[in-house]
Length: 300
Image (tube, rainbow, N blue to C red; front, side, top):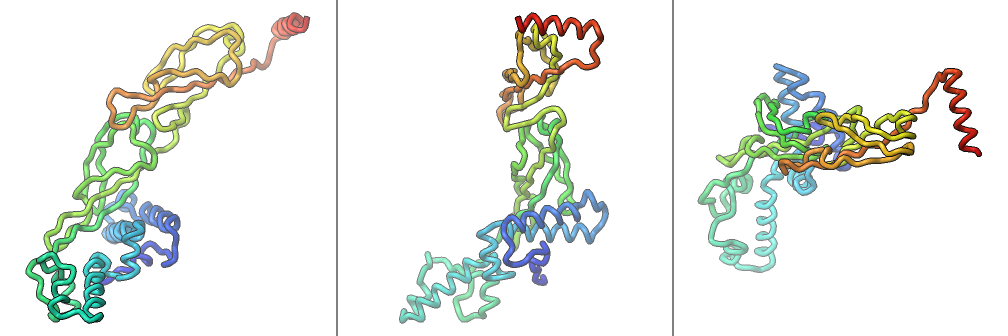
């Protein structure tokens, strides 16, 4: 397999910051996503390379190994152990000590490693298995979709994957779907798929973790005299008492009317209502007269 330069895949410089790599990945992943480019094999290939590159460069430890060993970064431990053994042998140790140094009775060299350095060392008695690369993807949901547990099907590298999204998933949260990453090597297990959720804003409700916030218009007369109103909750309606003399910006809490708590069935946050007093306009002559009388009464 030809060497793939992950920096070129993500179109970033080798000195790119973590934030720059993340930004580049998101931009390219959206551009080449299979949902945007159905039946486009070239886009599918690019999307797979982009995910693979982000899996390595987006992880500080893997990126360090990649920068040091390039295409052989997954075998960094073997290279480092070889260097350790070579340093020991070069410092005056015997050949027997060199062969046994750092070993637990099993030969740690893989066939891959010996293919690079020849048969100078002892030949491996077993073939090492390597887990396949992990994939990463983003999935956008509206707030209604995040409110209830439901199943979703997405396409990753040409394969349809159906999974359950638990109610209460948060914006920016990442979940793992085991075994849906890249193929392993030498019979090793498949990698995993990591999905990060982007929750879109809602026109009427603002979410903060498990709580919801909404603004409700209240007419002046109800604010002054008090009474009862009906307000929208996220899954229906609720009656709410208004105290006489309610001020603009007053907040009230509706317990248990917020967002579901992630993976805690039956638990909900609260809904916080902020009243916005609506001042009447286009008053009739009679109304203006009455307001003037009220004004004089308040001033006396």
